[in-house]
Image (cartoon, rainbow, N blue to C red):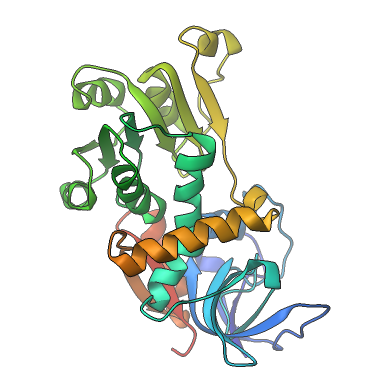
Length: 317
């Protein structure tokens, strides 16, 4: 089968299309003929072995696929690795039937990025009605969904950050009250100004480094900052416990794999997200449909921050 394989760690250039044996299910694994594979920012960390879970070469990247099982079910699945291929394997515990009316791209937007946004707000931040929410990278895969969910669930004020005017306009169209420049310089002041002179109750942050530092400064008393990535690939300033005690603030880490290991946490989120898409209340954004042969370009575009929403790969091309 055709697949994208990584034989040495590095940047997007290490993604190479190759002919490899199709995977063989063991135990209760399901074999899925892949119609589309999702691209996540975590994939760019996997290729350079800087992800939370250590990787070994050779491997096929890609943690999510949508396609057909051997008995004809249309499903979306978390597969861990192996998604950038014509066939992939997944555990039944992480496979969900896709309802009619939900597109392949929308299903892929929900399975990792949607469930992340859902749990960031519901499980980690425990958002209450009326609270202010800052979504960093509000036009991205997780951010574009988190903005909509925060608005749907009664946030008092939703603020997005984004790197360009077009992305900020998208964040506002999706439900943000205001969107601001996300560059680190002066960010804390812009956040407070965007929240009518007040610090924010909740921050969803995946950049790390100076952006995390600025967001923490802008956090209100009893506020919660949930960090779920490090797109800048730079560490933030060490956060002494005493700096959190003043203001009774919380700095919380989130990794979706901890939810994947507890299937009810995924099934509850997916059922809710599917229902919201079918009702028209949640609108996943398709940011690019790339041939499998252009996986390098997809990673380059993602890392250079020129994309919005969900990126997918088509293994038939």
